[in-house]
Length: 70
Image 1 (cartoon, helix red, strand yellow):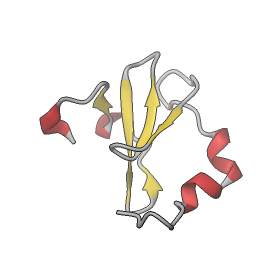
Image 2 (cartoon, one colour):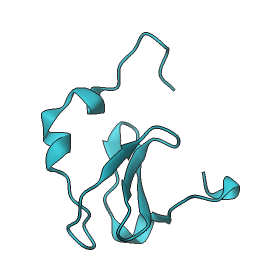
Image 3 (cartoon, one colour):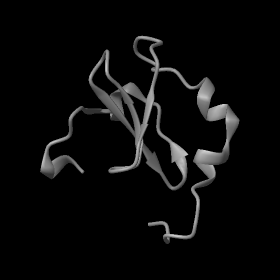
Image 4 (spheres, helix red, strand yellow):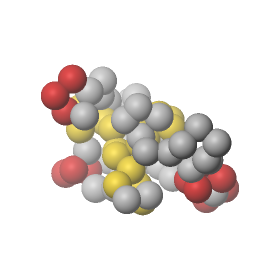
């Protein structure tokens, strides 16, 4: 978890803007809780694990996440 004065390195990386949904190639939206990326077209959440986005479709969770899926 980041301290209030820390900034995620992901939010500073311009390459993040180049990410696309691996399932539909659609636009991803950055979300903070839980940290990751959401494809609204596919209703999938791709989590950030150990500072790296996990873009495997098989590991993605249905969005919006239920309380137990976080």
